[in-house]
Length: 499
Image 1 (cartoon, rainbow, N blue to C red):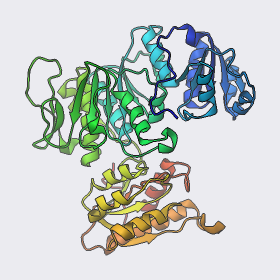
Image 2 (image 1 turned 180 degrees about the vertical axis):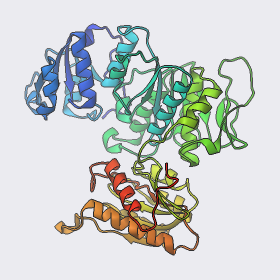
Image 3 (image 1 turned 45 degrees about the vertical axis):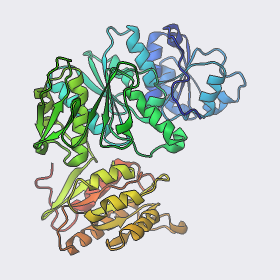
Image 4 (image 1 turned 30 degrees about the horizontal axis):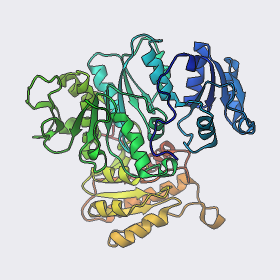
């Protein structure tokens, strides 16, 4: 597996590459968007997906469909195609990408295709791309950018890994001038030509290493976001903070929770501030952006996301006033540090989207004292560093999910005095137990019992699982909904004051 993205992209790109014979791998959101767009351009499109039923609408639109397995059975399957467009989930070492590259066939992701289309002038003047990546906080930061640019009166859309695919936004009416593009490491790997107007790497922690093959490859994919003229990095993160602009002459701008140095954004006297001379005029003044208490979500992770968003917006000339208005009106997305119920002074908070230890740590550190509801599929991630970092804030822990023993063992080693309850799930030795919603209800009741028993009343009962959800639930959203319903069903629970 290659550690460096980009070896599938030709040195020069002609429109004939995407207007000829194109094979699109994957018929879900990204693949369907690419196929529809290519068909509208007049390309001859073949869609391969083992679930040929989901390709039926594309066939109706003029594409040909074939199962991936059947395609790969043909020794000369690459013959006759000018381009392979892969959906983000296709691993670099999979048979489709490796076979195509071995035959000299270019392999692009849907975002790579969108980039070349936008730069070609087919759809008019190219747009300004603001690219957001990181292990955690991407969606919140991208939403903040959309809110800020909207407050400035500029047509903008959040897209990529959030909202619509980039190609769909490029053809939308009325025309969008700024793209707030959330990109995963998978999307960035398959989009190595992207050179955003400004891009940010918020943070980097171990994740998706099974897909990338190594931490170095994961970091290299993320760093594609820093290949434009303005590269923004989260300085408080030990990995992201070491990254710099990826092209000669580009500027690296940092942001931190403390007072900023020259060329940085940060926090000073209770305000998010900008200490960057964006226009090269020599003005070294510190520009206030917004009071810390106005930023949502609250806590360090929300403040860092806001600083990253502000940096990208300031890079394209958005005023400090628009930054403040946009952050004030920004609404936190579902299942991201979302208050769902309250009993007395304790808030029940759904952060089901905290699906890895790095995200869970940031979530917990946003509160003084919590009862933590954790567990699910850890995907091989270790939780020892997480437990060490948050143990002083834990009033108790309730553990669920398939990897609950890993979390329980880490707590026993590093936080043995923290009260811990394990709620057994339904996969034990083939013995059928309660449904996931009933297990979550039991977990929430146990969490409230721990909370009520603690003499130092916790601020929150916090669902921040540090793990994926598919061992028990249809997704992190279903997990969060189950937590919210269980919290609201507790005696004395109220939604008054919960937004």
